[in-house]
Length: 399
Ligand SMILES: *[C@@H]1O[C@H](CO)[C@@H](O)[C@H](O)[C@H]1NC(C)=O
Image 1 (cartoon, protein in one colour):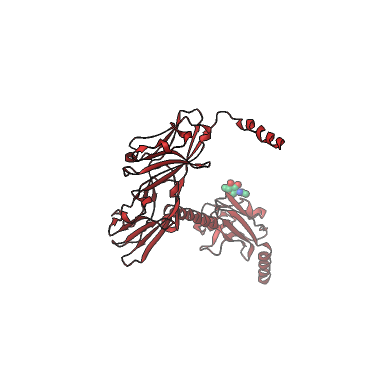
Image 2 (tube, protein in one colour):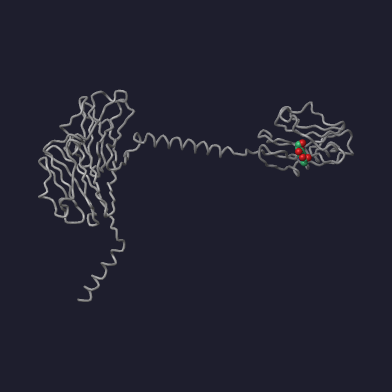
């Protein structure tokens, strides 16, 4: 008899092992087990998990549920059909599923003489939000944070930092920062891509006599004692001529390079639009104030060809005799223009044919500033082109 029972157990286990998969938080799962117990003496059904201590998940005997040996994990979460021992439906209803419910559930029937291991069920309770997805989310968040930091501190990581400003702004900041401790007596050199010196800082002060005339009075590199690693340069009144890659190089006393950073400065070309018939239009150009008395100013139209003088100011007065006839009596500049640095040109009664690229420069032997302004004067008659068309046609016919 014992031998036979053992045989039965083996058969049952191998044939009825099954697996159930579901997600945590699920209302309930029914672990199926069927075995006719009515012919057994005083049968007891035990659901167990042998990887737990105590292993009992649920126990049912003739008198009813016997839960004093039940593992605490399952307290209040298990039930079996009331008439399980009569019908042979020994299924276990396990509710409020948790991750820790994963394991092998064994349905065993005991009687006075026998013990039958009826069924093994593999239950796998999965996370709603699986751990790989959590890991992915964590990576994503980390990535965002790192990305954000990189953007925020990009001048520390990227070789070329970019700044873009509109032509006409007062100044543009060219960042050059390091968190590394720099010695007191460093030399800082800012150069443009033509290798011209934009700004030199040495022995604790600026060295303006070293810089190119184009940059004279237009740069500022304030060393802040609280932030000794900040060697950023302020470039005043940037114009399209300043579009360039600037290099900040820091040397120690022995001339060894401690740091090198690059900044790409983009300046949007100044665009002015006006409709024909307007009283006047202003071509703006504001630059550093207090320019030398002997500086000359020239406003020229460089496109379309030919290049012509639109307005000339020299020796402290306008020079209408070297002005193009088209612009005679139509241009005006502010008084005290060298003192204020406002070199804007007022063009009266703009015409469609005034459309073009204007170029202004101010200079003396120490100073050079320039700016481009693109002027568009829209004509009031829209279909002007159709009235022009016949001319080339007639020319063709005459050939
Ligand atoms: C399992 O038990 C829950 C809670 O008592 C109940 O809502 C659900 O209907 C039961 N499932 C079955 C199949 O008996």
